[in-house]
Length: 186
Image: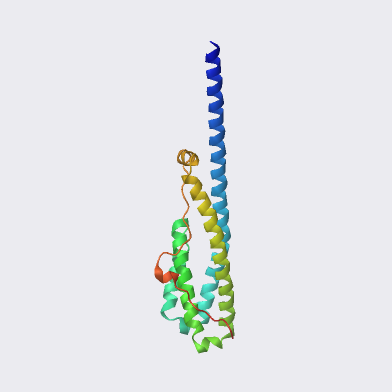
């Protein structure tokens, strides 16, 4: 009879340890998801700032922007989606198109004389740097969170809790990986 009580006590201790591990894992996943939300919100501030600058830049250089104007407007519309995965992809494409336009305009002698353009280009360049830094932070947080979804024992907790992986903010096409040289010097 004593061994039955010992066995019952061991089972209770194991059950409590499993419950504590589940609660700890669940809380860690919730914290990771919250960190992803915070990182995306931080990046979103800079993305919004860029979206606010682009129409002004296009208006300033409307003659030189030509066919890029339509490409940027289409990319801006795509970047307004609420779905984070679609938004991340649209913002990556928008970055490429903005940098391509800035590269083209920087080569245009008329734009080098346009003080308004130069100011927008500098502001947009700083904003692109801020986005790049925020994107690095976001990707680091997402990488840690997504890895925790796949490690034992949290993968069981994630499955039971309905946790989903977050999208990385990355470049898809080789054309998007090419460096664009932009010179903002007057």
